[in-house]
Amino acid sequence: MSRVAYVNGRYVPHRQASVHVEDRGYQFADGIYEVCTVRDGVPMEEKGHLDRLERSLREMRIDMPMSRAAFSLAMRETIRRNLVTNGIVYLQVTRGVSPRDHAFPTKKIRPAVVMTARNAKAHPAAWLEDGVKAITMPDIRWGRCDIKTVGLLPNCFAKQAARENGAYETILYDDKGVVTEGSSSNAWIVTEAGVLVTRAPSNEILNGVTRLELIKLAAAEGLKFEERSFTLDELRRAREAFVTSASSFVMPVTQVDDKTVANGKPGAVATKLRAALMAHMEKQVAAAQA
Ligand code: PMP
Image (cartoon, rainbow, N blue to C red):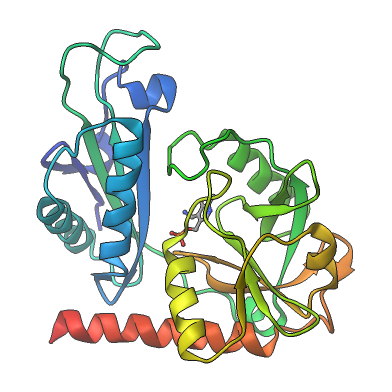
């Protein structure tokens, strides 16, 4: 199967898909992106992802390059042309092409829109049965982590450190020892007292679409929930820990650095919330196919 990419309104062979050398995304990371999970060919949480895409663009002072309906259509067409059943669709919008200058171009330029989609393997059974390892590192990112920019170098460094340490994710903490989030996920704990906790949205974290959905699902399950920051120390002492993202869903964390979380097995809350999220996605597939 030959892959196809959407580039500024055209579907081109993936290998030939390219952007200009003076695209500001390439030179300044002056752009934003979204990753949606695809289940049975249907993009999940489309509204949430488009809401956040619009918000990121607004914060960057980049005009919406096309309507939400046009994004939705192109996203579905990219999924279809790449024969994606279960995987991801990637959307990226950069400010566009302009002679290199740090300041925004004064001339109105057209934002560049790129989309790709690919199938992804199901998570290994062992990750769900045993949980995964996370390491921790200082959060060295900037003050606007709420914008989903393509400027991801600190996140790349953190994920690379996880790989080199046999870990699934790196959980980041600020200079006060307070957890911010994962390198590409939101972080959650269930405290010793049995309360589900995740950090409130702010400039310090990305407000995950999965995070927002999981808060609703936790309420529907009647779980005790607090939206607040938690420390590294609380993470290490937690009854449960897990991370969430469009591609991780709910991933139980059973080891943090060299410390086992609780009894080293995925906890009841993480297991329940993962099942609730999977069921919620199945409903979205059924609704799209009805
Ligand atoms: N935080 C960061 C830094 C991320 O990169 C991601 C994944 N894009 C998330 C949180 C989780 O967001 P979502 O649930 O929308 O995938």
